[in-house]
Length: 281
Image (cartoon, rainbow, N blue to C red; front, top):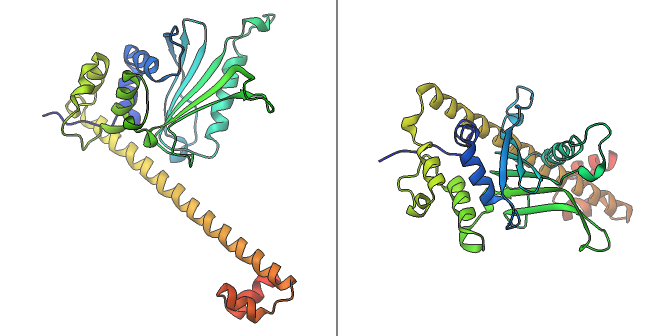
């Protein structure tokens, strides 16, 4: 019985989608919100970004530029962890691709729409939605929009195939990304019904990786784990600091209303000294 690696890891995702453009095209045509008469026809793999030697900047996996049969460009990125500047970077990369279509002297009418697409193994929204589609709309009339620059973000942790209506290939590819990992013992037969997914599954088998690749695989997940722990610690620290600031503001407001320090200390469950320090700042 074969054992598998997680397709979301840097090394494995690149082996599947970075070395097999036929799989990437099938995958993208399944998950992208393309009109029924559109299909990805060509792919261009982009050069890796020059990033600092820090875990928080290392988890962008595959950057690729695609062109469909209607002349629209797609910038696709796989990201394991959401960061506060991710959306800005996505918008910058997409807008840059849009601007670089024109050569000196070209007319603006030749500009094609550009879509930035990101797959995230993390959540950033509170609404539990897995599919996020952004575009520029009129502030007073949402039915009026500018279509040339759009962003699509997919949150894999929020993806629930039983609660959505989507084409079969979309569901199966996203299940492939979300469900298959080192703990997988039996693969759902429905995933094997699609030839491209069956081929991708064969590329996940541990037996097809060298010892050096498996070591790199483990190290990549260690880096992701360290980053998530770091970000979680920063988030908790931020929440604690926020609560402390709110409490200090409350103490000052109560004192300005003429309430005594003793009464404030009792209400806020603080010592007399703690209240006094807050008022002195």
